[in-house]
Amino acid sequence: MNYKSFENLSIDIREWLKDLPDDYDLIVGIPRSGILPATLIALYKNLPLTDVEGLIQKRVLYPGKRLVVNNVSLFKRDRLKILIVDDSISSGSQLETVKNKVHSLLSDDKYIFHYGVVYTTRKSRHLVDFFYEVLKHPRCFEWNIFHSAVLKKSCVDIDGILCRDPTKNENDDGSKYVEFIKNVKPLIIPTVEIGWLVTCRLEKYREMTEEWLKKYGIKYDQLYMMDIQDKETRIALSNYAEYKAKIYKETRAEFFLESSKEQAIKIARICNKDVYCYEDNKVYKPNSKLNTGMIEDENPIFFRMIKKIKKLFNTLI
Image (cartoon, rainbow, N blue to C red; front, side):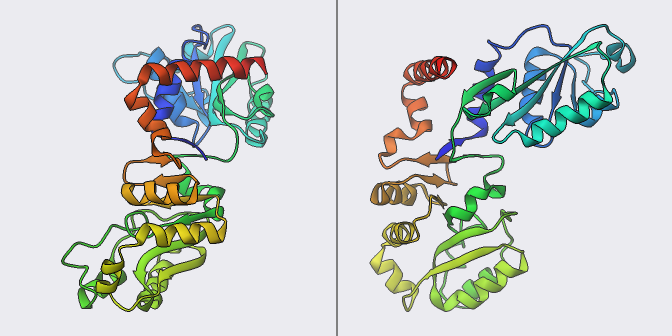
């Protein structure tokens, strides 16, 4: 799985700025995911910022005291140079919609439009004027992972992701735990269906777990729970990662979203497949040292060198 966090996005945009022209007059973000990279570019370059509707209505976002922008004078400039930005492109359908809308409503030849994305595929890179990196599928991003079709082919933990973990006091395998399951507030409510929910909750709590999921509109295909008698037995076995890894293998899921770092590393090694850890926001590979975050932390010079080689390779192929 090719995964990008907000931290990765920020680093990539700083590198991308070196290759972007310096003479833009306005940065435009394509809602919603394109707003963040557009904002970062506008801030770094101290340029006015707007979204697609703002561009059509010829207005910019209030820039604050550091940048004084007059909407009227800005849009009266001759040959106004505009960079329209999105986070990524795949099929290109959304970008095509934006292009058609912008060019039909702002057809005056006084505007110069360029289009850029941070991440593209090989097949779609010709659709934009600028891109930073070719990032092939399967891929997902921190800002949309819980609203992505990736979840349909993924195993997802419950406690620690969809809701917080129970406290030691709540985790009594009795009335307090029942109260927790029934009334805990969700941390995240995915907007797409999850393939397989995989939890270490005991099978005897299935009905109330299903009721909680229904209450918050969390859709899923299957729910796996530990079929053992009590908490003490579960603790004695202490096979949480092994249990989850077995299901990861059996379902042939493409990805696993796990709350615990320790378990994420074990699951990845057992299954020889990628695991996303919500606890530290990293993707662990079968060899945990290949985690992109760990490479960057342990050897930043090597990490940057590899990225530059990849970028050069992408421009040549």
